[in-house]
Length: 444
Ligand code: FA5
Ligand code: MG
Image (cartoon, rainbow, N blue to C red; front, top):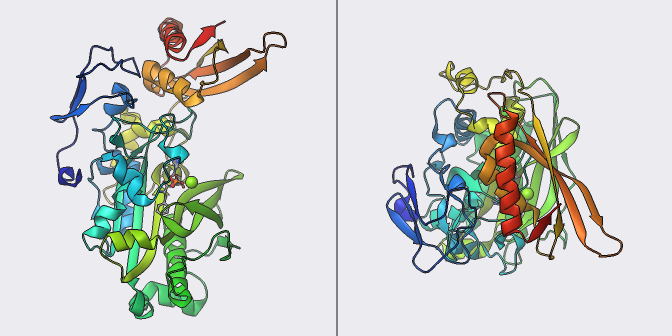
């Protein structure tokens, strides 16, 4: 239903026709209230939880801004898949049907809950992943494509989490009868098979102990020989992509494959890279659920799909320490990447870190419904990008009353200036009022 908006202009204006102030993350909904986004009205209902501060970011489209690190990374990935079709302008406002139902998400999947996803109303939401467009693109008889876009999830607040991030979906499908011949047209793949190692980078290590088993089986409709061709080609395509992206990275590259689960691929895996002493998940992937290809009218095909997290990779490649920096409009950030007209990856040189302003907030819970994502959403709505992180520092149950008390530490810090205690106190006061009003807690 939204595919017709695919090439529409950016959603650069939105209007909230409600009586609520923009700081209110849960507009009180009465009968005829609507959001108007780029001239399209959406009815609000009791599922609505999207906030004006999130909607105001819809127009930014960082992956389409020339010289932005996410743009540079996107184009480098596209260059690795030169014969694919590219879709970079799908509307992030999608139906729940597309984001979840079409992909076989069970009705009780946690990703569907209001604490995890942003809903405009019961039927319409902000996509939580670029897989939301898979069925639509397969249905237009595409057999190899990349989709990039902004995706939205309600989440905690720290240096690697932001409610909006970017994904790149890739997929390639082959004629089941002819998969071996079709794959043999991929010259890079054949070279890698013959030389028993993937060219491009020598100081890298790929660890893959995954095996096909009942925990992560092949689909019963798939002939084993054919599916094995697809699996090998998927793993080759991603390993060689990562090796190419990291070709100039100073450290040794360690890649690891682990089993995973997605409702729309089977078998499924995640790919991780070793970074700063930890395994960092950069991608989910697998063999496309045959039901999706059947629904798309491509039942004679078999193939793979992946979804890469662009910020995660860009933070490592460009040395960007805080995910909020991607949203910075400060020229000290943006100008670092603009001199390079050939889309090179260059290291970010941090400008000075401005001092933090730390505030604690503690409260008693009056019921069992408290969810940290709702709490963080209220903070974000009042403080926007002035919050660096939010940490739970105390959680105790009173021995007599059995009431539970939580204490959170909010670390306020701007990326481009020194914040004043006065301004933060005002924000903190609004946060306190909001959480008391909306989360059924009693401030201490
Ligand atoms: C998905 O979103 C699946 N749609 C991926 C997929 C596509 C699987 C096609 C199979 C076939 P997941 O929720 O794991 O999966 O997210 C994919 C990637 O997005 C992660 O590996 C990670 O790199 C990135 N990502 C996920 N959550 C965040 C976050 N909060 N902040 C930044 N990046 C994130
Ligand atoms: Mg994951």
